Length: 392
Image 1 (cartoon, rainbow, N blue to C red):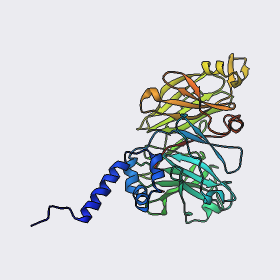
Image 2: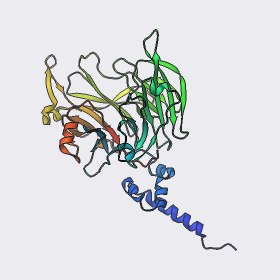
Image 3: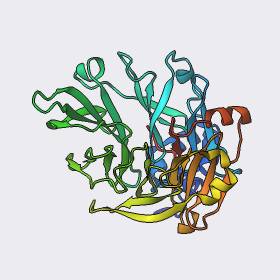
Image 4: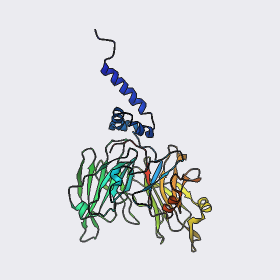
């Protein structure tokens, strides 16, 4: 006759299951602290399966990382006063590197980083989780030419809703076409699951620079400037294809400012060509059929409150030349919670896309440094901070 009392193994399993269910309900900030409770808790919270259960879908960004004017230091720009952001690169492995590291992409809670400068003869690339302060250095592709003799661009592809593993796409310039003068590229893809690089497809010619890649819809996207084609590379099919042409007006002599990025499953583009007081926020359809207008932005109220934005007038049109830069478009859980992060000379503001109201981002660091680093919009970009327990 079987005993009605559970065995010690069953008791332990039951307690472990109950503890897991409790921990899954806690905020990520608490979970990072609880790793120090015991080796058992550290093992549980660090387990890839637990991390995947805790974050099946990416959280909305709660702030930005922004370059400072001090070596090896980044500013943390939270969107809310009650949500602090840990500074990146807090471990001795980063601070001890003589070159320092800089962020080149943010993707669903993970950061792709490179040792500075990019064109050092032997740069290091790593994938870094700023929430857990863990990182993994990427192995070098097999061919020496990628790192030593050619310019290359790296882009991170990570979707925790699909897999706990990530990919890194490397595009390297091998040569210049003899007849066309276009650059000749080769694609390689790294998989964190296998820990190795794979050659993808044949060499191809293009005029676009494959920097500032944006991951969305199981693909990495690169925006071409002006009439240059834009491309996307699908991670699953490993096929490179063209995107629809950029929207907006053409023919202005003035510099074109734009923002290109992803938030909560939406790919966005803003473009401001020539003197203007407003611009459109575009979104790409998931079938890549077109860019469509999702919001219209008028900066009149912001200009009125921040006259330092105005640097002159285009007399032919009677419109202002404005100094500002869109650092991020953040989609909220509700449409009315969606907002822009706009950099003005010396500060950054939130602009609600529905209510058309704005407020300054809270200052949690040295005020003078914030003002210095944000003084010249358009020079640097911000990188989204998304809380995540994902393993690297």
